[in-house]
Length: 274
Image (cartoon, rainbow, N blue to C red; front, side, top):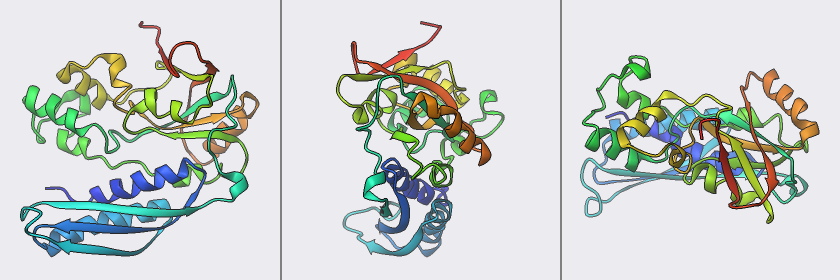
């Protein structure tokens, strides 16, 4: 019954993807399809879209609502959208300049970030017998539903000071496939990403999912962001300056790994526990 944050998630998924190419978002358009036009509900949905655009620094230039009772039940709706951004051709970040020994810098996530909810529902609700109103001590007394619906972070303000500086060699937006798939996609052949998974704090919501869903610890890093929503790749000599810029804008970050020569797979997870 909470509909005022899903719009933030929709904007975030679009904006964070273009930020990973080095582009600044310009505008966003939304599309809502529903079985019955409920003005109060749709007002909440659009409220979230507007908030997401504010966070992204993008204009909401239009949208479309389609009422299709033959396609959707009365209490169902689909939300989709797209964004357009701009980047100088010479400043496009495509990962082609990533080199061995480049350093991986992680920016923290706010939670699940719109990913893995099929497993979350199975682990917590079906197998774990919990509900949205369940209160778990690990989550600080907050209702489980509120924790799961924490909006996706939009990284526009965090990354804007770095875009165009030439410091960033690659950016990976950590969503489905997480560390084992997202980062390797932008790494040139012959290289791999080596992650120290003890180098950043993992939000307790992931520990709860792992326990109730009986998910293997390392497997969690192939499904969820585990507390890191963006991974930046920079030269070793540029780490201090990059971190300093982030610090000056109150953006926390973690040194979470490095680029190595490929031995096995294109992503490796290391922990003192394994």
